[in-house]
Length: 351
Image (cartoon, rainbow, N blue to C red):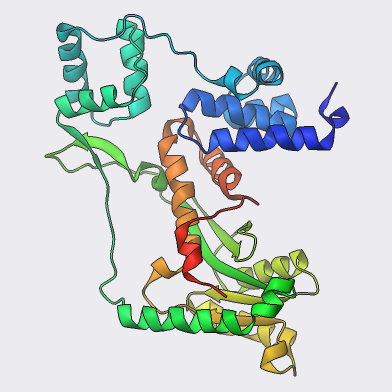
């Protein structure tokens, strides 16, 4: 029986199971298997999947068959664990191997220990202890904007909540759609934002292809938590208008409230002309599109920022699978496209 003959509900259930598995904390090999199976279930040709993921067509067919007979459990890695631990001498060898590397990755360490000594730990803590023994820690950068005004952010949140409350009836009936919108510029270098490194040394990662980049527009539906994404050549007025027209098409006949930052092309030029046209001579309460700006210099107000971060963290976790920028874009879109997201930041705004 091929995919076209499968009952729609059964196929949707299988795809839902795979999506939940993919978003969990899984090994890179499990990720490849799951994505390959998911694409196959969606009707993608085996040779297309092979090119995108860098696997054989046999690989795709094999894991699809395993999934069909055993479900998600069948595509998980089998735990061998024999022998169950490293000797003191073997531990010293691993630590020395770690100390002489320039870059570190958990999955690479897991593979090295298994291949060299036949040891596969159940708990990641055992591998973390090996990193610690080599004086290697998980390093993470954080950013702040000194121009951000907490009081202004608070007032803006109150203003947004007041507008949402005023339009509560229309929002609950579906007559009004509330969308948080933001742009993301995906760079090849985004892969290496979080790495293992020696605690007492600065981590420097050479990037030679910084020009490889892709701009994405994303909109989070406040009511359904559905996320819509489109790629565009750049973040400008022309691309903004195209994306808003796409959203209008998705929500035909509904009024839209857009909540976003104060980028110049959100307020002037082509988009302002477009806004004047769609709202024409209507009263503000009947505008087809109403725009609300966040407070300036405070991106933490926008829940879409968290979605971009989740997507980039997903890429960073599996950066060694990304052999080309084409694959990077594929995985980024795979993680975000038409998925539902629900996290605390969304609920700071209420009707």
